[in-house]
Image (cartoon, rainbow over all chains, first blue to last red; front, top):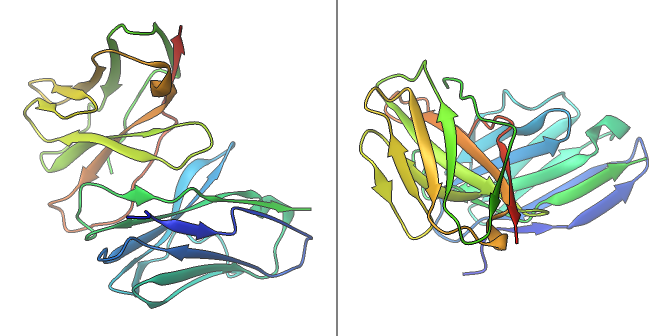
Length: 114
Length: 113
């Protein structure tokens, strides 16, 4: 199994631009999670989906952030417009179910907004 | 989720056992204890979990205190590849509030050759 796949691995963009991060969960997993990691705040949950439906988006910092999961094998996290404080590593994780003991994390996307 | 307290960093020698402590004095009866680790420049990875009894798997052992207010992750023979940040996380699985993981600051484990 290829594991959770994220793209791009690195993204550098200018303030005000739209950024789209992509995630392919492990086949057969029904739950998908987006996390953000910064030095100041550590790892934070942004949003999670179960069976392609957003369940909890209370961690999404602002309306500039949006996430979609159009099908079981693809999810996007979009930031529009981006700001320098959005610079972070964004991780996608998947699990067999919301209650599964183990979440599998992707390699992350390092986003730099200048 | 209830809060956990871990030392900021620990140092050990290669091929020696490592005991990583975690305090969770406000743990509830339905909180499972999870450990994840994050190797440099990688995403977190699951290590082990338990509820009341001690647990063993191929990666580590988890020793849970009888009152469940603390636990210890045991790496039986550390290697340089075990250098990582180790996170102790509580999850209320039975509460029905299934959600993501709440990470603290974790313990930065340094392995000396």
